[in-house]
Image (cartoon, rainbow, N blue to C red; front, side, top):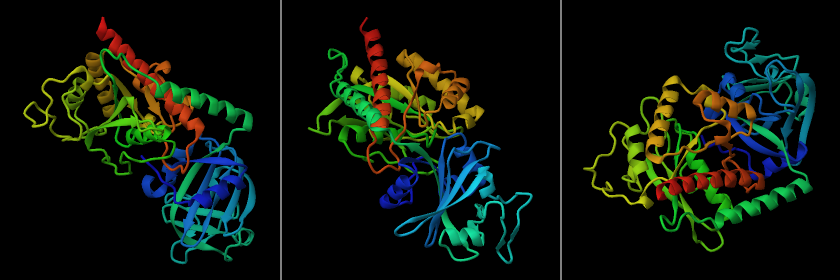
Length: 418
C-alpha cells in the first residue's frame, strides 16, 4: 500500500543529516498497519538500520536503531527529540528493540491505566502502541528537553528503513548507468511491422503497488515525482477500473513505445475475476472499463471490443508483489495466482518478471519458494511513495525492470511473426 510520511520535507532532511546522511524508506505507518507491535516488527524485521518516529500533539520523538531489528539481538539505540532548531539525543546503549515497546498482552506490563503511571528503568523510553501513549523516565525527559516524568498520548507512529547515501564515486557511476538505461528506453522500438507500442499488464494482490509502479515509471521519464495513477491504503483497493497509461518523454512530451495497464487487484474472495484477465490479455476490454468483482465482462457489454487487433492485446504480463508481505499470502491467493499464471501462458505464451519493493535476497527466495518463479525471472524495484525527489538508484531499478518487460514483449512478438 502507498504510504506517505507525516514528516515535513525540512524535518526529514534534518533527521537524515543528523544520523549521518541517510535516505529514508517508509516501512510502517500505524494508522495504516494498525497500532500493533506485532505488525510493526513484522514489517521492520531484517530491514537494516531503522528509525522510529512518534508524533505527539506538539512533539516529534523517537529512536534510531543503528544496526536494524533482528529478533533477540541487542543493538545500539539512540533516543531523540526533534526541536525547532536542533535535535537532542540520548544513547541508551545496546538493547533488543523490543525493550521500547509494550503490547496489550505483554506479561510484565507495568502500566497503571487508572493513574497512567509508567516505569521503564531499562530503556527509560516506553512506547505503548495499542494505547497510543509514549512515556519517558526523568533522566530521558531531561536529556531530550521534554517535561519531567513525561507521559503523553500520540497520534501516529512511523518506522523508516535508513540507507547510507552513495559516496561521490559510486554516485557518479549510478548516474551514468541511469542515463544509459533512460536513453535505451527512450529510444526503444518494438517490431514496427506488428505494433508501434507494447502493452504491459500489471497483476497482483490488492495493495501490492501496481499503481505506485506506474507513477514511479512516469516520474523517471518526467524528471520529477508524479502521482497520476490513484494510490492509497483502502484494504479493498483503489484501482477499480481498467486503465491504460501512455508514458511520455518529459522533454518533448512524445509518447514512448510502451503502455502500462493497471487493473483491479486480486484477492481471495473478490477482486479481479480470472475470466476478466483472459479478456484483457486478448484485447477485448476497453480503457476505463469498470470492473465488477462478482461478474466478468461479456460480449454484450456496450464497450466490449469484438475484434481486437494485435495492438489491443497484452504483450507482456508483470506480477507485482509487496516483498514485505509475500510470505503471508494465503493458500487461496497462491492457488489463484498459479491459476492466473496458467491462463497467461495459454494466452501470451511467455510469463514475465515479478516485481517487489525491497532488495533483500531472502525476499526473492521467498517468492521463488511460494510461487515457483525462477530467481532469474524476479527483479526488484522500489517505488516512489513517500519521497520528495527522484533518486538515481531507484530509477535504475525501475528502468531495469521496464527493460526486462520490453524484452519479454519482444520475445512474444517474435514468436507471433514465425
